[in-house]
Image 1 (cartoon, one colour):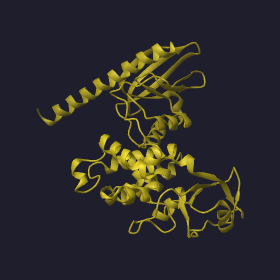
Image 2 (cartoon, helix red, strand yellow):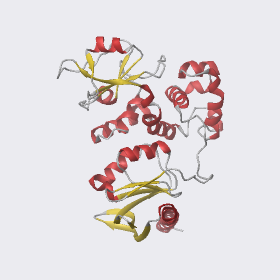
Image 3 (tube, helix red, strand yellow):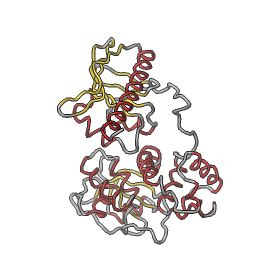
Image 4 (cartoon, one colour):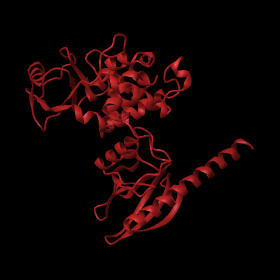
Length: 350
Protein backbone atom coordinates (compact mmCIF):
# COMPACT_ATOMS: atom_id res chain seq x y z
CA UNK A 1 0.00 0.00 0.00
CA UNK A 2 1.53 3.34 -1.05
CA UNK A 3 1.47 6.56 0.96
CA UNK A 4 -1.52 8.05 -0.86
CA UNK A 5 -3.58 4.90 -0.34
CA UNK A 6 -2.63 4.84 3.34
CA UNK A 7 -3.69 8.47 3.78
CA UNK A 8 -7.01 7.77 2.04
CA UNK A 9 -7.67 4.75 4.24
CA UNK A 10 -6.84 6.69 7.42
CA UNK A 11 -9.15 9.51 6.38
CA UNK A 12 -11.95 7.05 5.66
CA UNK A 13 -11.56 5.43 9.10
CA UNK A 14 -11.52 8.88 10.73
CA UNK A 15 -14.70 9.91 8.92
CA UNK A 16 -16.45 6.70 9.92
CA UNK A 17 -15.60 7.33 13.59
CA UNK A 18 -16.90 10.88 13.34
CA UNK A 19 -20.10 9.67 11.69
CA UNK A 20 -20.67 7.15 14.48
CA UNK A 21 -20.09 9.80 17.16
CA UNK A 22 -22.51 12.13 15.36
CA UNK A 23 -25.14 9.38 15.06
CA UNK A 24 -24.93 8.43 18.74
CA UNK A 25 -25.08 12.04 19.90
CA UNK A 26 -28.09 12.88 17.73
CA UNK A 27 -29.98 9.81 18.97
CA UNK A 28 -29.23 10.71 22.59
CA UNK A 29 -30.21 14.34 22.06
CA UNK A 30 -33.56 13.48 20.48
CA UNK A 31 -34.36 10.88 23.16
CA UNK A 32 -33.43 13.27 25.98
CA UNK A 33 -35.00 16.53 24.79
CA UNK A 34 -37.64 15.56 22.22
CA UNK A 35 -36.23 17.81 19.49
CA UNK A 36 -35.91 16.55 15.93
CA UNK A 37 -32.51 16.55 14.23
CA UNK A 38 -31.79 16.24 10.51
CA UNK A 39 -28.29 15.81 9.09
CA UNK A 40 -28.00 18.14 6.09
CA UNK A 41 -24.52 17.03 5.05
CA UNK A 42 -21.16 15.68 6.24
CA UNK A 43 -17.51 16.35 5.42
CA UNK A 44 -18.29 19.62 3.68
CA UNK A 45 -16.08 22.45 2.45
CA UNK A 46 -17.42 25.98 2.72
CA UNK A 47 -15.37 29.14 2.13
CA UNK A 48 -12.20 27.02 2.02
CA UNK A 49 -13.02 25.65 5.47
CA UNK A 50 -13.72 22.02 6.26
CA UNK A 51 -16.93 21.40 8.21
CA UNK A 52 -17.58 17.97 9.71
CA UNK A 53 -21.35 18.24 9.39
CA UNK A 54 -24.38 20.50 9.08
CA UNK A 55 -27.51 19.69 11.07
CA UNK A 56 -30.97 21.18 11.48
CA UNK A 57 -32.62 21.09 14.93
CA UNK A 58 -36.39 21.53 14.99
CA UNK A 59 -38.07 22.34 18.30
CA UNK A 60 -41.16 24.14 19.55
CA UNK A 61 -39.13 27.35 19.36
CA UNK A 62 -38.50 26.90 15.64
CA UNK A 63 -35.67 25.69 13.42
CA UNK A 64 -31.96 26.22 14.01
CA UNK A 65 -29.17 25.18 11.66
CA UNK A 66 -25.68 24.38 13.00
CA UNK A 67 -22.24 23.78 11.59
CA UNK A 68 -20.75 20.91 13.61
CA UNK A 69 -17.18 20.30 14.74
CA UNK A 70 -16.77 16.62 15.71
CA UNK A 71 -13.91 15.47 17.95
CA UNK A 72 -13.17 11.99 19.26
CA UNK A 73 -11.06 13.37 22.10
CA UNK A 74 -11.08 16.79 23.73
CA UNK A 75 -7.52 17.99 24.21
CA UNK A 76 -6.30 20.40 26.86
CA UNK A 77 -6.64 24.15 26.32
CA UNK A 78 -9.00 23.74 23.35
CA UNK A 79 -11.14 26.80 24.20
CA UNK A 80 -9.00 29.45 22.43
CA UNK A 81 -8.90 27.34 19.27
CA UNK A 82 -12.68 26.90 19.33
CA UNK A 83 -13.32 30.61 19.98
CA UNK A 84 -11.07 31.48 17.05
CA UNK A 85 -12.64 28.88 14.75
CA UNK A 86 -16.27 29.64 15.58
CA UNK A 87 -15.76 33.42 15.66
CA UNK A 88 -18.72 35.79 15.80
CA UNK A 89 -21.00 33.08 14.39
CA UNK A 90 -20.47 30.82 17.44
CA UNK A 91 -24.23 30.71 18.20
CA UNK A 92 -24.64 28.53 15.11
CA UNK A 93 -21.68 26.24 15.67
CA UNK A 94 -21.94 23.06 17.70
CA UNK A 95 -18.95 21.30 19.28
CA UNK A 96 -19.62 17.56 19.47
CA UNK A 97 -17.52 14.88 21.16
CA UNK A 98 -17.75 11.46 22.77
CA UNK A 99 -16.92 12.98 26.16
CA UNK A 100 -16.08 16.52 27.32
CA UNK A 101 -14.43 17.00 30.76
CA UNK A 102 -16.55 18.90 33.27
CA UNK A 103 -14.18 21.88 33.59
CA UNK A 104 -14.10 22.24 29.79
CA UNK A 105 -17.90 22.20 29.61
CA UNK A 106 -18.03 24.96 32.22
CA UNK A 107 -15.58 27.02 30.16
CA UNK A 108 -17.68 26.45 27.05
CA UNK A 109 -20.86 27.63 28.81
CA UNK A 110 -19.14 30.75 30.18
CA UNK A 111 -17.97 31.63 26.67
CA UNK A 112 -21.23 30.79 24.89
CA UNK A 113 -19.94 27.71 23.05
CA UNK A 114 -22.64 25.17 22.18
CA UNK A 115 -21.66 21.57 22.86
CA UNK A 116 -23.11 18.06 22.73
CA UNK A 117 -21.77 14.78 24.13
CA UNK A 118 -22.59 11.33 22.78
CA UNK A 119 -24.44 10.66 26.05
CA UNK A 120 -26.84 13.54 25.37
CA UNK A 121 -25.38 16.07 27.80
CA UNK A 122 -25.52 19.41 26.04
CA UNK A 123 -25.55 23.18 26.18
CA UNK A 124 -27.20 24.77 23.13
CA UNK A 125 -28.24 28.41 23.26
CA UNK A 126 -29.05 30.49 20.17
CA UNK A 127 -31.41 33.00 21.75
CA UNK A 128 -34.33 31.18 20.15
CA UNK A 129 -33.37 27.67 21.28
CA UNK A 130 -32.10 26.78 24.75
CA UNK A 131 -31.17 23.21 25.77
CA UNK A 132 -29.11 22.30 28.82
CA UNK A 133 -28.67 18.69 29.97
CA UNK A 134 -25.97 17.83 32.49
CA UNK A 135 -27.02 14.66 34.29
CA UNK A 136 -26.74 11.88 31.70
CA UNK A 137 -24.31 9.24 32.90
CA UNK A 138 -21.29 8.63 30.72
CA UNK A 139 -20.64 5.02 29.77
CA UNK A 140 -17.92 3.42 31.86
CA UNK A 141 -15.65 2.93 28.85
CA UNK A 142 -15.48 6.69 28.39
CA UNK A 143 -15.65 7.80 31.98
CA UNK A 144 -12.39 9.11 33.45
CA UNK A 145 -11.06 7.80 36.72
CA UNK A 146 -12.89 9.35 39.65
CA UNK A 147 -10.75 10.63 42.46
CA UNK A 148 -8.88 13.67 43.70
CA UNK A 149 -6.12 14.00 41.10
CA UNK A 150 -7.91 16.82 39.27
CA UNK A 151 -9.14 18.50 42.43
CA UNK A 152 -7.19 21.22 44.31
CA UNK A 153 -4.80 18.96 46.24
CA UNK A 154 -4.01 16.87 43.17
CA UNK A 155 -3.44 19.95 41.03
CA UNK A 156 -1.00 21.31 43.60
CA UNK A 157 0.94 18.04 43.64
CA UNK A 158 1.04 17.80 39.85
CA UNK A 159 2.22 21.41 39.63
CA UNK A 160 5.08 20.73 42.03
CA UNK A 161 6.11 17.58 40.14
CA UNK A 162 5.92 19.31 36.76
CA UNK A 163 8.09 22.15 38.07
CA UNK A 164 10.62 19.72 39.56
CA UNK A 165 10.32 16.17 38.13
CA UNK A 166 13.02 14.92 40.51
CA UNK A 167 10.33 14.99 43.20
CA UNK A 168 8.86 11.81 41.72
CA UNK A 169 11.57 9.82 43.44
CA UNK A 170 11.24 11.76 46.70
CA UNK A 171 9.70 10.72 49.98
CA UNK A 172 6.06 11.33 50.80
CA UNK A 173 7.14 14.04 53.23
CA UNK A 174 9.20 15.80 50.55
CA UNK A 175 6.24 15.71 48.17
CA UNK A 176 3.90 16.96 50.88
CA UNK A 177 6.13 19.90 51.72
CA UNK A 178 6.82 20.77 48.07
CA UNK A 179 3.13 20.75 47.14
CA UNK A 180 1.80 22.23 50.38
CA UNK A 181 -0.76 19.47 50.89
CA UNK A 182 -1.47 16.94 53.64
CA UNK A 183 0.98 14.07 54.02
CA UNK A 184 -1.86 11.52 54.05
CA UNK A 185 -3.05 12.55 50.57
CA UNK A 186 0.25 11.77 48.82
CA UNK A 187 -0.08 7.98 48.49
CA UNK A 188 -3.61 7.92 46.95
CA UNK A 189 -2.68 10.74 44.56
CA UNK A 190 0.44 8.92 43.39
CA UNK A 191 -1.65 5.81 42.81
CA UNK A 192 -4.06 7.83 40.67
CA UNK A 193 -1.17 9.28 38.67
CA UNK A 194 0.00 5.75 37.89
CA UNK A 195 -3.50 4.39 37.20
CA UNK A 196 -4.25 7.19 34.73
CA UNK A 197 -1.09 6.34 32.83
CA UNK A 198 0.85 9.53 33.36
CA UNK A 199 4.01 7.65 34.36
CA UNK A 200 5.69 5.06 32.17
CA UNK A 201 7.33 2.17 34.02
CA UNK A 202 10.73 3.55 33.05
CA UNK A 203 9.89 6.95 34.50
CA UNK A 204 10.43 5.67 38.02
CA UNK A 205 14.11 5.09 37.33
CA UNK A 206 14.76 7.21 34.24
CA UNK A 207 13.66 10.64 33.07
CA UNK A 208 10.38 11.47 34.89
CA UNK A 209 7.31 12.12 32.72
CA UNK A 210 9.44 11.45 29.64
CA UNK A 211 6.58 10.59 27.30
CA UNK A 212 3.66 12.27 29.03
CA UNK A 213 4.96 15.57 30.39
CA UNK A 214 3.62 17.87 27.65
CA UNK A 215 0.15 16.29 27.66
CA UNK A 216 0.05 16.37 31.46
CA UNK A 217 1.12 20.02 31.56
CA UNK A 218 -1.51 20.98 28.97
CA UNK A 219 -4.23 19.13 30.87
CA UNK A 220 -3.17 20.86 34.08
CA UNK A 221 -3.29 24.24 32.31
CA UNK A 222 -6.84 23.55 31.12
CA UNK A 223 -8.22 22.51 34.50
CA UNK A 224 -6.41 24.92 36.85
CA UNK A 225 -8.44 28.07 35.96
CA UNK A 226 -11.72 26.24 36.60
CA UNK A 227 -10.98 24.06 39.64
CA UNK A 228 -8.19 25.63 41.72
CA UNK A 229 -7.84 29.29 40.78
CA UNK A 230 -11.34 30.41 41.90
CA UNK A 231 -10.61 29.05 45.41
CA UNK A 232 -7.49 31.23 45.63
CA UNK A 233 -9.11 34.57 44.83
CA UNK A 234 -8.48 37.35 47.35
CA UNK A 235 -10.32 40.13 45.56
CA UNK A 236 -10.35 42.81 42.87
CA UNK A 237 -8.35 46.03 43.10
CA UNK A 238 -7.23 49.09 41.14
CA UNK A 239 -4.18 51.31 41.29
CA UNK A 240 -4.75 54.22 43.69
CA UNK A 241 -3.29 56.64 41.13
CA UNK A 242 -5.15 56.26 37.79
CA UNK A 243 -2.85 55.64 34.85
CA UNK A 244 0.15 54.86 37.05
CA UNK A 245 2.88 52.60 35.64
CA UNK A 246 2.77 49.03 36.94
CA UNK A 247 5.90 48.07 38.88
CA UNK A 248 7.93 45.26 37.31
CA UNK A 249 9.76 44.65 40.57
CA UNK A 250 7.53 43.56 43.44
CA UNK A 251 7.98 43.38 47.22
CA UNK A 252 8.89 39.99 48.70
CA UNK A 253 6.03 37.51 48.72
CA UNK A 254 4.29 39.01 45.68
CA UNK A 255 4.35 37.68 42.10
CA UNK A 256 2.99 38.85 38.77
CA UNK A 257 0.84 36.39 36.83
CA UNK A 258 -1.33 36.67 33.72
CA UNK A 259 -0.54 39.53 31.32
CA UNK A 260 2.25 41.16 33.39
CA UNK A 261 3.99 37.77 33.59
CA UNK A 262 3.54 37.39 29.84
CA UNK A 263 5.27 40.72 29.28
CA UNK A 264 8.11 39.92 31.70
CA UNK A 265 8.75 36.54 30.05
CA UNK A 266 8.56 37.79 26.43
CA UNK A 267 8.65 41.64 26.44
CA UNK A 268 5.88 41.45 23.85
CA UNK A 269 2.62 42.10 25.70
CA UNK A 270 1.33 45.40 27.06
CA UNK A 271 -0.88 44.45 30.03
CA UNK A 272 -4.45 45.67 30.23
CA UNK A 273 -5.41 43.48 33.17
CA UNK A 274 -3.18 42.53 36.09
CA UNK A 275 -2.92 39.31 38.09
CA UNK A 276 -1.11 39.14 41.43
CA UNK A 277 -0.25 36.18 43.64
CA UNK A 278 0.81 36.68 47.21
CA UNK A 279 1.33 34.91 50.52
CA UNK A 280 1.00 38.19 52.42
CA UNK A 281 -2.12 39.69 54.10
CA UNK A 282 -4.40 41.82 51.94
CA UNK A 283 -3.61 44.86 54.11
CA UNK A 284 0.09 44.53 53.22
CA UNK A 285 -0.79 44.08 49.56
CA UNK A 286 -2.82 47.30 49.58
CA UNK A 287 -0.12 49.27 51.37
CA UNK A 288 2.95 48.13 49.45
CA UNK A 289 1.33 47.95 46.01
CA UNK A 290 -0.59 51.23 46.45
CA UNK A 291 -3.83 49.67 45.30
CA UNK A 292 -7.42 49.97 46.47
CA UNK A 293 -10.27 47.42 46.67
CA UNK A 294 -12.56 47.80 43.66
CA UNK A 295 -14.87 45.08 42.31
CA UNK A 296 -14.60 46.69 38.87
CA UNK A 297 -10.83 47.09 39.05
CA UNK A 298 -8.40 45.55 36.58
CA UNK A 299 -6.19 43.91 39.22
CA UNK A 300 -7.12 40.46 40.56
CA UNK A 301 -5.20 39.08 43.54
CA UNK A 302 -4.86 35.39 44.41
CA UNK A 303 -3.26 33.39 47.20
CA UNK A 304 0.09 31.88 46.28
CA UNK A 305 -0.28 28.07 46.27
CA UNK A 306 3.16 26.80 45.24
CA UNK A 307 6.42 26.50 47.17
CA UNK A 308 9.57 28.18 45.87
CA UNK A 309 12.38 25.72 45.27
CA UNK A 310 16.02 26.53 44.52
CA UNK A 311 17.25 26.01 40.98
CA UNK A 312 13.91 26.46 39.20
CA UNK A 313 14.03 28.78 36.16
CA UNK A 314 11.57 31.49 37.14
CA UNK A 315 11.78 35.22 36.40
CA UNK A 316 12.10 37.18 39.68
CA UNK A 317 8.77 38.40 41.02
CA UNK A 318 6.84 36.31 38.47
CA UNK A 319 4.77 33.14 38.72
CA UNK A 320 6.30 29.91 37.31
CA UNK A 321 6.01 29.59 33.50
CA UNK A 322 3.37 26.83 33.54
CA UNK A 323 1.06 29.01 35.65
CA UNK A 324 1.64 32.03 33.38
CA UNK A 325 0.88 29.83 30.36
CA UNK A 326 -2.33 28.48 31.94
CA UNK A 327 -3.68 31.96 32.67
CA UNK A 328 -2.80 33.41 29.27
CA UNK A 329 -3.95 30.37 27.29
CA UNK A 330 -7.32 30.37 29.02
CA UNK A 331 -7.82 34.09 28.50
CA UNK A 332 -10.61 35.22 26.19
CA UNK A 333 -8.21 37.83 24.78
CA UNK A 334 -6.53 36.66 21.57
CA UNK A 335 -3.51 38.90 22.31
CA UNK A 336 -2.62 36.57 25.14
CA UNK A 337 -2.78 33.30 23.18
CA UNK A 338 0.29 34.00 21.05
CA UNK A 339 2.28 34.99 24.14
CA UNK A 340 1.12 31.81 25.90
CA UNK A 341 2.45 29.70 23.03
CA UNK A 342 5.82 31.45 23.21
CA UNK A 343 6.07 30.79 26.95
CA UNK A 344 5.10 27.17 26.34
CA UNK A 345 7.75 26.65 23.67
CA UNK A 346 10.59 28.28 25.62
CA UNK A 347 9.82 27.39 29.24
CA UNK A 348 7.07 24.77 29.61
CA UNK A 349 7.73 22.08 26.97
CA UNK A 350 11.07 23.03 25.34
